[in-house]
Length: 352
Image 1: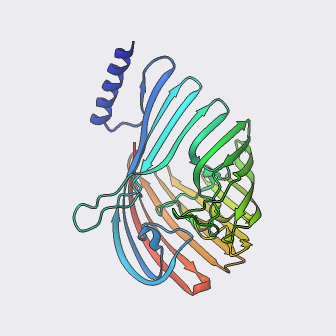
Image 2 (image 1 turned 90 degrees about the vertical axis):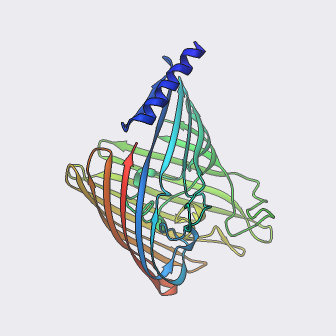
Image 3 (image 1 turned 60 degrees about the vertical axis):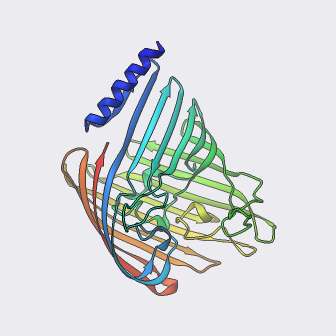
Protein backbone atom coordinates (compact mmCIF):
# COMPACT_ATOMS: atom_id res chain seq x y z
CA UNK A 1 0.00 0.00 0.00
CA UNK A 2 2.88 2.36 0.84
CA UNK A 3 4.58 1.73 -2.51
CA UNK A 4 1.28 2.35 -4.29
CA UNK A 5 0.96 5.73 -2.59
CA UNK A 6 4.50 6.66 -3.61
CA UNK A 7 3.73 5.69 -7.20
CA UNK A 8 0.58 7.82 -7.22
CA UNK A 9 2.50 10.77 -5.77
CA UNK A 10 5.31 10.45 -8.29
CA UNK A 11 2.80 10.27 -11.15
CA UNK A 12 1.04 13.37 -9.86
CA UNK A 13 4.30 15.31 -9.56
CA UNK A 14 5.20 14.45 -13.14
CA UNK A 15 1.80 15.70 -14.25
CA UNK A 16 2.36 18.89 -12.25
CA UNK A 17 5.69 19.50 -13.97
CA UNK A 18 4.34 18.89 -17.46
CA UNK A 19 0.97 20.72 -17.51
CA UNK A 20 -0.45 24.13 -16.72
CA UNK A 21 -3.84 23.06 -15.36
CA UNK A 22 -5.39 24.40 -12.17
CA UNK A 23 -6.24 22.37 -9.05
CA UNK A 24 -3.27 20.06 -8.82
CA UNK A 25 -4.86 17.59 -6.42
CA UNK A 26 -3.43 14.12 -6.05
CA UNK A 27 -5.62 11.50 -4.39
CA UNK A 28 -3.48 9.09 -2.39
CA UNK A 29 -6.32 7.07 -0.84
CA UNK A 30 -9.96 7.46 0.21
CA UNK A 31 -8.84 9.70 3.10
CA UNK A 32 -5.59 11.18 1.84
CA UNK A 33 -5.04 13.95 -0.72
CA UNK A 34 -2.18 16.33 -1.43
CA UNK A 35 -2.74 19.60 -3.29
CA UNK A 36 -0.33 22.07 -4.90
CA UNK A 37 -1.34 25.68 -5.53
CA UNK A 38 -0.26 29.31 -5.68
CA UNK A 39 0.52 31.70 -8.48
CA UNK A 40 3.32 33.22 -10.52
CA UNK A 41 3.32 37.01 -10.83
CA UNK A 42 5.55 39.55 -12.54
CA UNK A 43 5.38 43.28 -11.71
CA UNK A 44 6.73 46.48 -13.24
CA UNK A 45 6.37 49.45 -10.90
CA UNK A 46 7.26 53.14 -11.18
CA UNK A 47 7.27 55.51 -8.18
CA UNK A 48 7.82 59.26 -8.14
CA UNK A 49 7.62 61.63 -5.18
CA UNK A 50 9.16 62.18 -1.74
CA UNK A 51 7.72 59.20 0.19
CA UNK A 52 9.54 55.87 0.08
CA UNK A 53 8.46 52.52 1.52
CA UNK A 54 12.10 51.64 1.98
CA UNK A 55 11.52 48.63 4.23
CA UNK A 56 10.53 46.58 1.19
CA UNK A 57 12.54 48.42 -1.47
CA UNK A 58 9.36 50.04 -2.77
CA UNK A 59 7.86 46.79 -4.07
CA UNK A 60 4.60 47.79 -2.38
CA UNK A 61 3.26 50.25 0.18
CA UNK A 62 2.94 49.47 3.86
CA UNK A 63 2.03 51.79 6.71
CA UNK A 64 5.65 52.62 7.47
CA UNK A 65 7.44 54.95 5.06
CA UNK A 66 10.25 57.49 5.05
CA UNK A 67 10.46 60.99 3.63
CA UNK A 68 13.00 60.94 0.84
CA UNK A 69 13.01 61.83 -2.83
CA UNK A 70 12.44 58.83 -5.04
CA UNK A 71 11.97 58.22 -8.75
CA UNK A 72 12.57 54.64 -9.79
CA UNK A 73 11.36 51.70 -11.84
CA UNK A 74 11.48 48.18 -10.43
CA UNK A 75 10.84 44.79 -11.98
CA UNK A 76 9.88 42.07 -9.50
CA UNK A 77 8.49 38.55 -9.24
CA UNK A 78 8.76 38.35 -5.44
CA UNK A 79 5.02 38.03 -4.82
CA UNK A 80 5.06 34.63 -6.57
CA UNK A 81 3.95 31.99 -4.09
CA UNK A 82 3.53 28.24 -3.78
CA UNK A 83 1.59 26.19 -1.27
CA UNK A 84 0.99 22.57 -0.39
CA UNK A 85 -1.99 21.15 1.49
CA UNK A 86 -2.17 17.63 2.87
CA UNK A 87 -5.54 16.26 4.01
CA UNK A 88 -6.04 13.06 5.99
CA UNK A 89 -9.68 12.82 7.07
CA UNK A 90 -10.30 15.53 9.69
CA UNK A 91 -6.61 16.47 9.73
CA UNK A 92 -5.19 19.16 7.44
CA UNK A 93 -1.63 20.44 7.12
CA UNK A 94 -0.86 23.56 5.07
CA UNK A 95 2.36 25.38 4.20
CA UNK A 96 2.87 28.38 1.90
CA UNK A 97 5.89 30.47 0.91
CA UNK A 98 6.58 33.52 -1.22
CA UNK A 99 9.85 35.26 -2.12
CA UNK A 100 9.87 38.41 -0.01
CA UNK A 101 12.54 36.91 2.25
CA UNK A 102 15.28 39.24 1.04
CA UNK A 103 18.74 38.35 -0.21
CA UNK A 104 20.15 38.68 -3.71
CA UNK A 105 20.81 41.82 -5.70
CA UNK A 106 19.98 43.37 -9.05
CA UNK A 107 23.52 43.19 -10.46
CA UNK A 108 23.57 39.58 -11.62
CA UNK A 109 21.07 36.90 -10.58
CA UNK A 110 18.31 38.73 -8.65
CA UNK A 111 18.15 35.81 -6.23
CA UNK A 112 15.51 35.99 -3.53
CA UNK A 113 15.02 33.93 -0.37
CA UNK A 114 11.77 32.03 0.19
CA UNK A 115 9.68 33.41 3.08
CA UNK A 116 7.30 31.42 5.24
CA UNK A 117 3.72 32.74 5.04
CA UNK A 118 1.68 29.89 6.51
CA UNK A 119 2.52 26.67 8.34
CA UNK A 120 -0.39 25.29 10.33
CA UNK A 121 -2.30 22.16 11.35
CA UNK A 122 -6.09 21.97 11.53
CA UNK A 123 -7.90 19.16 13.34
CA UNK A 124 -11.67 19.41 13.63
CA UNK A 125 -12.28 22.72 15.47
CA UNK A 126 -8.63 23.46 16.31
CA UNK A 127 -5.95 25.34 14.38
CA UNK A 128 -2.31 25.42 15.54
CA UNK A 129 0.63 27.11 13.82
CA UNK A 130 1.32 30.23 11.80
CA UNK A 131 -1.47 31.72 9.71
CA UNK A 132 -3.71 34.79 9.48
CA UNK A 133 -4.52 36.22 12.90
CA UNK A 134 -8.05 35.62 14.13
CA UNK A 135 -8.42 39.42 14.17
CA UNK A 136 -8.18 39.53 10.35
CA UNK A 137 -11.01 39.21 7.81
CA UNK A 138 -9.12 38.40 4.61
CA UNK A 139 -12.28 38.65 2.48
CA UNK A 140 -12.33 42.39 3.31
CA UNK A 141 -8.90 43.06 1.76
CA UNK A 142 -9.01 45.14 -1.42
CA UNK A 143 -8.09 43.58 -4.77
CA UNK A 144 -5.03 45.46 -6.01
CA UNK A 145 -1.93 45.15 -8.18
CA UNK A 146 0.02 46.69 -5.30
CA UNK A 147 0.62 43.81 -2.89
CA UNK A 148 -2.34 43.86 -0.49
CA UNK A 149 -3.71 47.24 -1.57
CA UNK A 150 -4.16 49.88 1.17
CA UNK A 151 -2.32 47.97 3.91
CA UNK A 152 -1.83 51.31 5.65
CA UNK A 153 -5.42 50.99 6.92
CA UNK A 154 -6.11 47.24 6.78
CA UNK A 155 -5.94 44.50 9.36
CA UNK A 156 -2.96 42.50 8.12
CA UNK A 157 -0.90 40.15 10.26
CA UNK A 158 0.11 36.50 10.24
CA UNK A 159 1.54 34.87 13.35
CA UNK A 160 1.62 31.73 15.48
CA UNK A 161 -1.58 30.93 17.32
CA UNK A 162 -3.90 28.36 18.85
CA UNK A 163 -7.48 28.87 17.67
CA UNK A 164 -10.82 27.24 18.44
CA UNK A 165 -13.70 27.57 15.97
CA UNK A 166 -17.34 26.70 16.54
CA UNK A 167 -19.83 27.79 13.94
CA UNK A 168 -19.24 31.46 13.12
CA UNK A 169 -17.37 32.13 16.38
CA UNK A 170 -13.61 31.97 16.84
CA UNK A 171 -11.42 32.53 19.89
CA UNK A 172 -7.64 32.30 20.02
CA UNK A 173 -4.47 32.94 21.96
CA UNK A 174 -1.75 34.36 19.74
CA UNK A 175 1.91 35.31 19.83
CA UNK A 176 2.52 38.41 22.02
CA UNK A 177 4.85 41.17 20.84
CA UNK A 178 5.14 44.72 22.21
CA UNK A 179 6.07 46.55 19.01
CA UNK A 180 7.84 49.72 20.11
CA UNK A 181 8.21 48.50 23.69
CA UNK A 182 10.62 46.08 25.34
CA UNK A 183 13.32 44.89 22.96
CA UNK A 184 15.58 41.96 23.75
CA UNK A 185 19.10 41.22 22.58
CA UNK A 186 17.73 39.43 19.50
CA UNK A 187 15.85 42.51 18.32
CA UNK A 188 12.34 41.66 19.46
CA UNK A 189 10.31 41.79 22.66
CA UNK A 190 11.56 39.27 25.23
CA UNK A 191 9.37 40.13 28.23
CA UNK A 192 5.92 39.50 26.73
CA UNK A 193 4.68 36.66 28.90
CA UNK A 194 0.90 36.75 28.37
CA UNK A 195 -0.49 35.71 24.95
CA UNK A 196 -2.76 38.06 23.04
CA UNK A 197 -6.43 37.02 23.31
CA UNK A 198 -8.69 37.51 20.30
CA UNK A 199 -12.35 36.71 19.65
CA UNK A 200 -14.33 37.16 16.44
CA UNK A 201 -17.88 36.50 15.26
CA UNK A 202 -18.71 36.52 11.54
CA UNK A 203 -22.22 37.11 10.23
CA UNK A 204 -22.62 35.34 6.88
CA UNK A 205 -25.27 35.04 4.20
CA UNK A 206 -25.93 35.19 0.47
CA UNK A 207 -25.36 38.93 0.82
CA UNK A 208 -21.73 38.52 1.95
CA UNK A 209 -20.22 38.75 5.45
CA UNK A 210 -19.54 41.13 8.32
CA UNK A 211 -17.07 40.26 11.08
CA UNK A 212 -16.81 41.84 14.53
CA UNK A 213 -13.53 41.21 16.36
CA UNK A 214 -11.94 42.28 19.61
CA UNK A 215 -8.45 41.85 21.06
CA UNK A 216 -6.97 42.16 24.54
CA UNK A 217 -3.23 42.33 25.23
CA UNK A 218 -0.66 43.05 27.87
CA UNK A 219 2.15 45.21 26.47
CA UNK A 220 5.60 45.69 27.97
CA UNK A 221 7.10 49.19 27.81
CA UNK A 222 10.79 49.94 27.28
CA UNK A 223 11.20 50.28 31.05
CA UNK A 224 9.51 46.94 31.72
CA UNK A 225 6.11 48.22 32.86
CA UNK A 226 2.99 46.32 31.88
CA UNK A 227 0.19 48.18 30.09
CA UNK A 228 -3.22 46.81 29.09
CA UNK A 229 -4.41 47.30 25.52
CA UNK A 230 -7.78 46.75 23.87
CA UNK A 231 -8.87 47.16 20.26
CA UNK A 232 -11.71 46.22 17.96
CA UNK A 233 -12.61 45.93 14.31
CA UNK A 234 -15.70 45.77 12.12
CA UNK A 235 -14.97 44.46 8.64
CA UNK A 236 -16.89 42.99 5.75
CA UNK A 237 -17.50 42.24 2.12
CA UNK A 238 -21.00 43.01 0.82
CA UNK A 239 -22.36 41.89 -2.55
CA UNK A 240 -24.02 44.71 -4.47
CA UNK A 241 -25.06 44.51 -8.16
CA UNK A 242 -24.28 41.52 -10.34
CA UNK A 243 -20.79 40.30 -9.39
CA UNK A 244 -19.79 43.63 -7.83
CA UNK A 245 -18.88 43.94 -4.16
CA UNK A 246 -18.11 46.55 -1.52
CA UNK A 247 -15.38 45.89 1.05
CA UNK A 248 -14.74 47.84 4.22
CA UNK A 249 -12.67 47.82 7.39
CA UNK A 250 -12.95 50.00 10.47
CA UNK A 251 -10.53 49.54 13.37
CA UNK A 252 -10.07 51.57 16.52
CA UNK A 253 -8.54 51.42 19.97
CA UNK A 254 -5.16 49.93 20.82
CA UNK A 255 -4.86 47.85 17.64
CA UNK A 256 -1.15 48.62 17.21
CA UNK A 257 0.72 46.17 14.99
CA UNK A 258 -2.48 44.34 14.04
CA UNK A 259 -3.62 47.15 11.71
CA UNK A 260 -1.80 49.22 9.13
CA UNK A 261 1.31 47.08 8.49
CA UNK A 262 3.63 49.13 10.74
CA UNK A 263 1.58 52.33 10.49
CA UNK A 264 1.41 52.34 14.30
CA UNK A 265 3.51 50.89 17.09
CA UNK A 266 1.83 49.23 20.05
CA UNK A 267 3.40 51.45 22.67
CA UNK A 268 5.19 54.82 22.59
CA UNK A 269 7.41 55.32 25.61
CA UNK A 270 5.07 54.45 28.47
CA UNK A 271 1.86 55.22 26.58
CA UNK A 272 -0.30 52.76 24.63
CA UNK A 273 -0.97 54.00 21.09
CA UNK A 274 -4.52 54.86 20.00
CA UNK A 275 -5.25 54.18 16.33
CA UNK A 276 -8.21 54.83 14.05
CA UNK A 277 -8.18 53.23 10.60
CA UNK A 278 -10.73 53.07 7.81
CA UNK A 279 -10.53 51.27 4.47
CA UNK A 280 -13.14 51.11 1.70
CA UNK A 281 -13.00 49.41 -1.68
CA UNK A 282 -15.42 48.80 -4.52
CA UNK A 283 -14.98 46.18 -7.25
CA UNK A 284 -16.95 46.47 -10.50
CA UNK A 285 -17.16 43.90 -13.30
CA UNK A 286 -17.47 45.56 -16.70
CA UNK A 287 -17.99 42.12 -18.27
CA UNK A 288 -16.95 38.52 -17.59
CA UNK A 289 -13.26 39.20 -18.31
CA UNK A 290 -12.79 42.86 -17.29
CA UNK A 291 -13.05 44.32 -13.80
CA UNK A 292 -11.90 47.42 -11.88
CA UNK A 293 -11.30 48.36 -8.26
CA UNK A 294 -11.13 51.71 -6.51
CA UNK A 295 -9.86 51.81 -2.92
CA UNK A 296 -9.00 54.25 -0.16
CA UNK A 297 -7.37 53.76 3.23
CA UNK A 298 -6.42 56.15 6.02
CA UNK A 299 -4.84 55.64 9.44
CA UNK A 300 -4.33 58.21 12.17
CA UNK A 301 -2.57 57.78 15.52
CA UNK A 302 -2.68 59.87 18.70
CA UNK A 303 0.70 59.41 20.41
CA UNK A 304 2.86 59.62 17.27
CA UNK A 305 0.43 61.94 15.46
CA UNK A 306 0.63 60.05 12.18
CA UNK A 307 -1.81 60.61 9.31
CA UNK A 308 -1.25 58.25 6.36
CA UNK A 309 -3.34 57.57 3.29
CA UNK A 310 -3.20 55.23 0.31
CA UNK A 311 -5.65 55.31 -2.61
CA UNK A 312 -5.62 53.53 -5.95
CA UNK A 313 -7.60 52.69 -9.08
CA UNK A 314 -6.97 49.64 -11.24
CA UNK A 315 -8.29 47.53 -14.11
CA UNK A 316 -7.72 43.80 -14.62
CA UNK A 317 -8.21 41.79 -17.79
CA UNK A 318 -8.58 37.99 -17.73
CA UNK A 319 -7.05 36.44 -20.82
CA UNK A 320 -8.00 32.96 -19.64
CA UNK A 321 -9.60 31.85 -16.34
CA UNK A 322 -6.08 31.53 -14.89
CA UNK A 323 -4.07 34.21 -16.72
CA UNK A 324 -4.68 37.93 -16.22
CA UNK A 325 -2.94 41.28 -16.30
CA UNK A 326 -3.71 44.62 -14.70
CA UNK A 327 -2.69 48.25 -14.44
CA UNK A 328 -2.98 50.37 -11.30
CA UNK A 329 -2.32 54.01 -10.49
CA UNK A 330 -2.35 55.46 -7.01
CA UNK A 331 -0.82 57.63 -4.33
CA UNK A 332 0.66 57.14 -0.85
CA UNK A 333 0.71 60.14 1.50
CA UNK A 334 2.25 60.92 4.90
CA UNK A 335 0.37 64.11 5.75
CA UNK A 336 2.22 64.64 9.04
CA UNK A 337 5.49 64.89 7.09
CA UNK A 338 4.10 66.66 4.01
CA UNK A 339 5.30 63.79 1.82
CA UNK A 340 3.64 61.70 -0.85
CA UNK A 341 4.44 59.63 -3.94
CA UNK A 342 2.51 58.62 -7.02
CA UNK A 343 2.91 55.18 -8.54
CA UNK A 344 1.85 53.14 -11.55
CA UNK A 345 2.12 49.36 -11.69
CA UNK A 346 1.66 46.67 -14.33
CA UNK A 347 1.08 43.11 -13.08
CA UNK A 348 0.76 39.79 -14.90
CA UNK A 349 -0.48 36.79 -12.91
CA UNK A 350 -0.85 33.09 -13.67
CA UNK A 351 -2.84 31.25 -11.01
CA UNK A 352 -1.84 27.62 -10.60
